[in-house]
Each structure stands twice: as C-alpha cells, then as structure tokens.
Length: 173
Image (cartoon, rainbow, N blue to C red; front, side, top):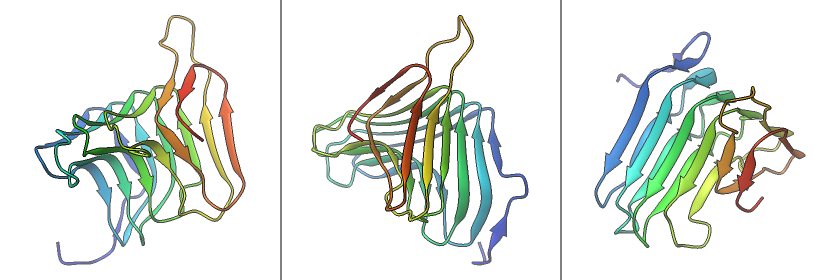
C-alpha cells in the first residue's frame, strides 16, 4: 500500500477460511501492521498457519497483532490454529505485540502445536500488555464440541484472568 493508516469500522468478521502455509519459512495467516485500527476480530470460521518446521525461520502464526496497531478483542467460535511439523519450527496461534488486546473469548479451538522446542507452542501471547487482560473459555450448548486451548498462555504485566467455564486448557500459563 501507500503506507497510510487503515481503520476497519466494526472490526474483522471471518466466516470462511484464512490460511497461510510455507516450507522452511514463516507463515502468517492474519497480520495487523502498524497503523491498522480494527478494534475486534470475530472468528466464526478458520484461521490457520502451517509450516514444515525444518528451519528456525519456520514459524507458524495464525494471528499477529503488530506494534502500533489497535485491536482490543478477539472472539473465536471455530478454529484459530498454528502448526509446525519439525523440531526447529515454532507455532503461535495469537501474538499481540501491540500490548492492547485485553479480551480473548473462546468457544471453539485455539491451538499451537508441533514444536518440540521449549516455549515453541504458544496459544495466546499477550505479554506485551500492561493493562488488565481476560481470557475466557465459555460454556457451549449440549451437543456442541467442548472448547479447547492447546499451547502456552502468556499474560502481560497487568492483572491476568483466565476463566474456564467449559472444555480444557493444555499448556503452561
């Protein structure tokens, strides 16, 4: 583009598939760069990043919120996933480098899998934030698959709250 700021009124609503796949390189499905003002991501579909993981550059990131962008809320009712297939790769489902994400609501699946490196599978990284942050995994209806978070969860310097009403969380907090 021309380098100007971008505002998306009402945020981003995904009902389809957003994906990125790479061999021996980084794969990022959604990247909000500096100057992007989105407010909210509502994911009703699938956001996926996949790498083969054979090199240190093979980093799969489903959602990357860059420094200088504005996003406060992520709501997921389907799938946000990052997968790497080798020892050298890393997987990050949600990474907030802006420090502004304060709310993550999950009634689907958020996962980062495949890395054998310590700290290589991070489901939610809000470590750049300084305000209070809440991650909620909400109760779903009978007959609906229970929600899951697979991978580590990192909170920022402010108060961090993890509310699990349904499903499971597998990873370090």
